[in-house]
Length: 278
Image (cartoon, rainbow, N blue to C red; front, side):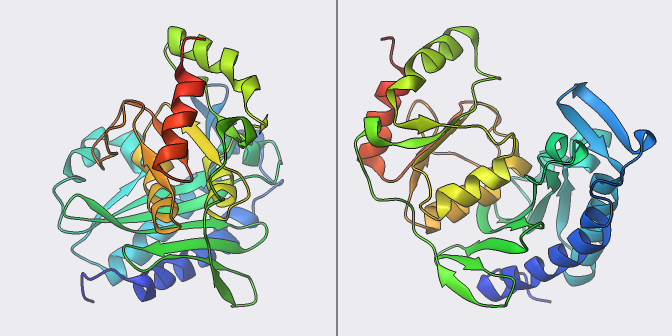
């Protein structure tokens, strides 16, 4: 199998993600026992038997297709953090979030997703975000646009929302992990936008963002399984994203935050509104 990653290859990745979601995620949804759920860093940071099973299935399927690729799964990194060190140098790597929004999944709330990104030579070249409940997915390959794949096999192009003034924007600012001073500024300024909400699931929030259903997202933590796929799909859908200081997001970045908006001008205006002192 070639190392070239285009839209056709990411469609293949979507297929194996759907298989894993049906077999390991949806089959366990609302059927987990107490022994199937463990906490990690906090009560909202949990892992389930479904996360681990889905990651194993996706990992094995990707290794069959791309035997020389580095596979970086969220749960594998929890067991062996050194896996992350190769992500920026690998000729080809895949990053897996087997269930994003695990706290929702464990609580029986149908707001979760499965995400996989492809990285080549330190650049994100492909991304898939699957909603396994509705069986719809956002798929992108670098330079080939962003596409919504429906359960019936049809697809259509996705575009971000049209630029508007920040006061007319809606979206989510995930403020929980911000430094105290920045958290105070964001939570004080957030009521100045048109509307905000929190799904406790980056995958579902990205699905809204890249299809023009909201205008912005703000995150502090930049773990690769949470953001690489969404970042590329948003870019291919015409949007602009950067760290809070305006610098570009890189595969190896672990800090600096991320702010998404429809274009550069609206990004700048939104940053000034949300992160400003008043």
